[in-house]
Length: 203
Image (cartoon, rainbow, N blue to C red; front, top):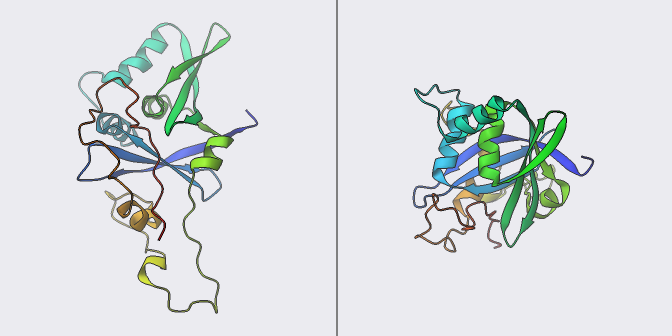
């Protein structure tokens, strides 16, 4: 646990030209952010839970939570434990009869379960160090008093329906989306890099 960093879901971003969504995780008590690509259905499942939307019948992740409860197992936390070949790997950590078990999971599914079970989300330090990003720091007074528009810090969004991570408005608009296959189906159970991080292009 010493190598794990607690994060929280800061926002979910939508790109109109791609089926994938971008979940932004924010390190607690820090300004480090971890962007993770997820499928649109998993993103919707996370959003519904965050907004506490009631559904008539249990959705997939509601069912998963209910199955844990039916077998007297308690979800303790979810983890993003590694990053390999541009794919994130996660765990669902549960306790049953006093025994802790770790269940391999896509981070997107783990996150959807975490917001329903109200449990901590942890990221391994090595993943944060290799894939996290920081908002651009403000220029100290006396240096570059007339920064270009792309260097200026955006004004925070206030609309309730908008994501709070306004510092990444420009970053998200410049993401390199060309490498994402337009034929990828988020529903297919395959390593299609739907949990793949992206970094801004260098100018």
